[in-house]
Image 1 (cartoon, rainbow, N blue to C red):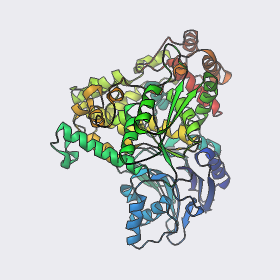
Image 2: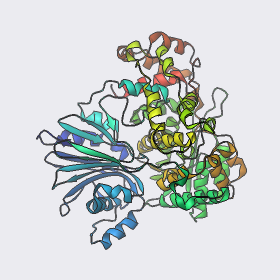
Image 3: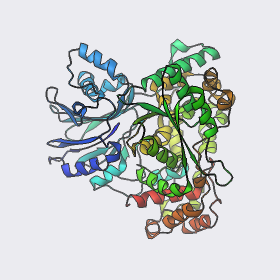
Image 4: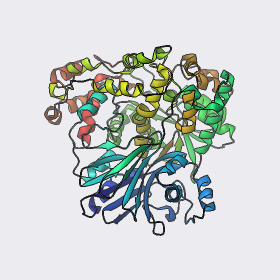
Length: 595
């Protein structure tokens, strides 16, 4: 896990090493263990390193192989790098390190851009070919590792974080009107290629982009699970009990894969089903002295601020080395501001500050953790999935919009300044386009495909990456193992919706976990003080929304903001997001990054 950056010129000029150096240094927290720069003519690469696999300097990046004519920067982890290394050695390749970076380089030489189809892991990479002057960018199937892009006819720049691109300079920082529409509709998600800034794009998940020396190029999406019952013929006709065993076996493999490291691996244990199941499967596989970590906050607004009762129960049951982290309100404001600074894009979820403060403490003990994110999107655990049961396929978009959208398109007219409004429903169009694609047998299948391949990439995946990497902590997510996701996509919808959602997963867990954890009401990282804005947090939001910068930017109607500041609980979105926090967080992020 690291941070990568680079530039490719198309105008005959040499790459700007100063800009690449600034971008690289801006990602110091992502890779505190080392850094490197490399350039050749129109291309420059930069890297910040977090040492996880092969702790020696032989694994330093950018990694260059003069014999193969390749230069590589890589962020992530190839969990099957050992198997690939053996295969490549048998094909005649020689290795100078035991790193997965060198495996990626030689896999690229052997298979070209199709190397991604051989990888099991999370990754973003850039490979430069000396002979052709070609640059290849790639991103993992679930978009777990980020890759941001900014460019024009003269050049392309890329980095693991959006603020790193800003550090390079010359980025168009106007607000993207379509992205703003998405932000206000999808509770801060801006899915797909867009970001809130007009001049920055993302390489989509499961995508390889090949860029020629003249700036022309091609793009290929290499993974798109169909979400149909016949997608995995070997699982056709399975009974409910057989599906339960298949899911449990696939999760066992996913958890075991994510223990690959030359440093200890811990678990973020919320006490919910997903993280508890990871702990149980590690214990089943003989993992001893497993470090687990839970976080709690002060109560507010009548809401409890921790779930220690459940995490303690799991820690005792499996004998983990458990760490309870309680955050007093005095640390919350500073932690929140630091979390906003760590965001590559504005993220409204109050979980962000919890992940930030939890990661800060966890990084004192371990450099790698497993975490339970993704299970709700993959196994239909959220409240907006059950309404889709039995709905005709053609009605999927309307039902999903009513359950998931923060507000309808027409509702934005009361919130956004008139010159920030779109005449068309860009967010509705995005959803309808995705749901109308071939495949996905039922309305629920179509929505789960949308959630898995688009929505979760930008939350929770981005949230976990940003908040953990702010402290040089690598977070691994076994529920986003692509083979497990493919299995879940082929699983009958009724098995996923059973027991209030995640039914097949709950059934699989019953032989391993106590019923009080499996059947408990769904929980989140509880940060009540953010959900119920008051005191210093309300003051922070008020200052951001009434500042000169906010007035000059003019995103929101001033009279609407004034009403919310008078009554912070006045408006909540369909999913419960506090609208004042949604507006305030966007301004806080823009101002924090000097925009």
